[in-house]
Amino acid sequence: MTLPDKRGTIEEAISAIGDGASVMLGGFGVPGTPFCLIRELVRQGPRNLTVIKNDANEAGMGVDWLLENGQVARLVTSHIGLNPTAIRMMNEGAIEVEFVPQGILAERIRIAGAGMMGFVTDIGLGTPIEEGKPRIAVDGRTGLLETALRADFALIHADSADSFGNLSFSASARNFNPLMAMAARKTIVEAERMVPLGALLPEHVHLSGTFIDIVVELPELPEVYGVIQR
Image (tube, rainbow, N blue to C red):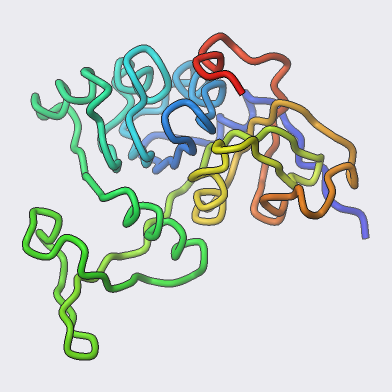
């Protein structure tokens, strides 16, 4: 069986994202954030996006580019405290922000990729997190129903990829990337390097290419990736 070649250009990959789309962005701060894909998303300019990311990055990078360009209508995230643009826009009512505890955010995404509809947890009971969520009794205990979180697209960053989309991540850059790739209708990957099929040892494949639609090889890493040193 011949595996499909999923390599493509960054322009064609991002062109599939239209106005009103929901987009998951991998990463935890800088590690694993697909800055080049985000930059191309800014260049092509679809509007009214729902952005799902663990954090809102910092001023002048990643999510902040989308916010400054007026492309985000809704942000689903764990925290925005390092991004004054996100704080200002939320306070002005320019964007809607849904805060989700980090572990709950990860689990909502994970179960979407597993094909489930939701899960029950007692985290958030009696706090603002409970607002609008059904209470459910399980074995005499009360919990909240947390629904699965899916998206139209996932944009993720990988260290290495082959042409089928098998991926290897570097250290903590794995974070939200595999979860989001499995929870999106279409997943676009930017990879620091392409390797031949079979070059990635099975134990080094952190995510199967089954979940990947397009792989874009990065010719070089812009300065924004240099915030951390490996």
